[in-house]
Image 1 (cartoon, rainbow, N blue to C red):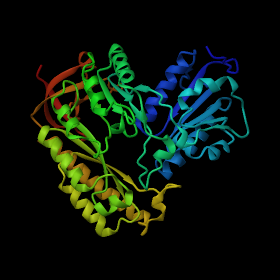
Image 2 (cartoon, rainbow, N blue to C red; image 1 turned 60 degrees about the vertical axis):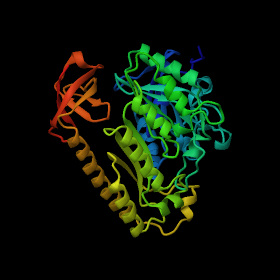
Image 3 (spheres, rainbow, N blue to C red; image 1 turned 120 degrees about the vertical axis):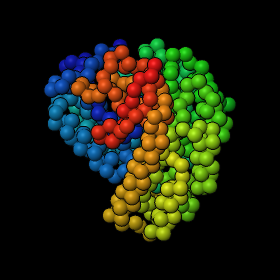
Image 4 (tube, helix red, strand yellow; image 1 turned 180 degrees about the horizontal axis):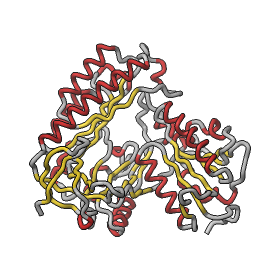
Length: 439
């Protein structure tokens, strides 16, 4: 046990912003602190340790982080405030200058929080412990329980791509990953805890095993053999790293779902070059076609950035038309945001902020249309659904293997079980299909 005598009691609050990877890491911090006798503060209770895990993907994310720090400090004025995550790695001194903050931990120190707790003290200027991004080498495993059925398993961290618009390599460091033995062991622990579905996550998961003999393909083959897990989903994977071998394996595997999430960012080859992406749209179209050949019912999500510097009106229209032609299911659209220390800041012309939002909304409308069409195409079909624990007073819901949201009346016996259902009409909100059991 570490020395925790500085704490009046071992109450802690967590606040996480950003991606599923951040949530997985916060969950691991919670487990580590629980082993030291800490517990989460109850609603309205004063905590003596506050941990904020930050995001910095956009300027708005930075603003939300600062607001969260101040808000949580007001609720817990006597607590020690520890800030970590991407914003902490990128702008540690800005955070340390906030009088509410006592300690700023960088990406490599995040999951080594315990070693810094005994020396915590209230400060007018927070202590900064951050490793320069080029020197980050440590991979810290983590796994979070998103709900009673789904877990998020971190298999990789960092990125070596240095796209012109992105600060992730500066915030997360170089690409690194766990070992297959280590990851499989964590999957077995999830199975032992009753988890039924694992989402494989990371910053650039297709890079798994870089500089080692292991590959992402080797990893998913090993995970497919773990008894007790009903489903795996592959989170975002770069199109140039999504090999035909991986696609074919998912198509015939026992446990991997026909569900892909592939970042495109732009449907214009000229804009892709400005972004310094590692593919062109012809390769992307080939990957989509290859998936649909092997798995006609597959759900394909696509990441896009609207209003990148250099994206003229003509280039956006070219991009939009290409995206509209793709047999994909849903678009995850982000409005371009200038980030410090990125090469994109030197690209002209600059797209007006209002115009960025117009383009973003146009892509969101296209996404809604594609998703509705995908749902309609599956009405009256039979699919397996893993049902989740609903919020109190809410209908029960779950997702098919190909990620169609299903809503049904509450049935306690179906929670955390895979049931075959026949998909029906849209629910009142229009965001799920109703269904009937057939097993």
